[in-house]
Length: 451
Image (cartoon, rainbow, N blue to C red; front, side, top):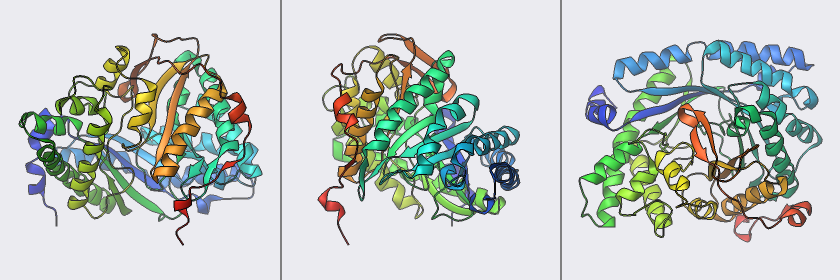
């Protein structure tokens, strides 16, 4: 059993090293809300979410005060909305707006699940649903969307990839007055997981219980601080330091997760021990890599250092909790990490290097601003490249890029808060239009056939 004593040894981490519970996310099944029309379904969805999560924010704040651990975000994830609105997909925005209304009333930071799973094929109702994403993201503040376009078992649905390039561009156009912020709430996945507590990609999987609490813990500053005390350690010793630190961080997350689940009468799901950075100095994954000896993140050696960090975090976390899940590793979102922001602004890290890093980190190309005139086919090609990495390596990968309408390389987008700011980075000029227009399915690799 974990006790309050387990938290006491983390006090210095909290006060000086930016340790926090990044999110307490309540997953809610909406399958019982399906009615004969969109209006009745939307009403049932709004009522259920309000009832299930009415105490989420208050309970998280109560736990934060009681244990002295900052809980930064309170979030909700729901069953992929495309499943709930399959009988009336063109009316999906009605359900989306009902979810946004519930999120506003409850005071949560984000609500995820305006989502579709089309990794093997796109049904007619899903085709229509996908077309509603730009409108919904441009007319709501807290609602987030995600689409799974591939998996290691099924391959990559290139028809969906082609469509998502256009959807990302349309979303950017509709929110161009806010630096195309709608795209910051839209993630395209390969191998999406059902228990991810982090936005914008969270949704409540159909294999989950009715109501589940998933917690995301974050402590890049804690890991960097620990490494500062061992400047001469070799990489084996450095990995051990990271493992021990991840163990302590995860214990705090497990305690909060169990307590939150008990008080909210929900099932304890998982602890996601991802190192999720913020734009604050002292809370950067990039700076951990530099603490290991890199002059600047993005240089040669970056991928190797990130691979070691990611693996050590996972090894330390699974020793601390039998409920580790979600994504669990190290995130590299450009706009949300001060070290990444500075490296990108100085031209020290490129889109190509970030893509290489995604082979060994938790997710993928995340919160990257690209020129506003980037063609939809190029965005689709970026998605396809990242999906291929996930498919072949049997890991979750994702793309969250922001085509900053009206901006060019060297300009900057600024979203504020945890979403941060990012310099607009160049993309390759060669056209992928013909490749993307072929459509079809990129078959799953042979190693997927394991039955």
